[in-house]
Image (cartoon, rainbow, N blue to C red; front, side, top):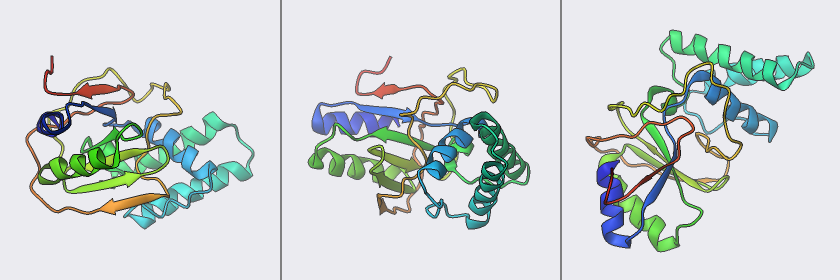
Length: 195
């Protein structure tokens, strides 16, 4: 991420804002609940079986008329069960994905961000709701401890999710870079002068 931020700054004199990274099952469950409530069928996830398990749990809880926290807990339990079997619906659960805010980037800056990220990531997805780029890495790299835990129920509604239903997929297969920022609810600005 340091290289991506530095290269982007060199080309644009702007910084990038990482809005999300490593997620706990509870954080992922909250984001999935928001997607499911909006009508998403979670088709954008590569592991259809894992996504379908989460959808089934969601609909079972909805039918039982349980509250939102019970729904989140149920989805988180499914995610935890999947994790125990080595199934990761989202690269965020592995610490090998970050989201970068794009709502304030021009078309040119979006193109440049993709160009500088391409050598360091395995996949870039531009999502429309909310506007951001989802960057995936082949493997997890050293994480930044943000103090979030599995029991932490704080999560902002504007926190960026894994993939939106309105996206442009730019699929790049390359070697992963040497740096990664992982964050829960941390919003981190990366530029040329990191401290």
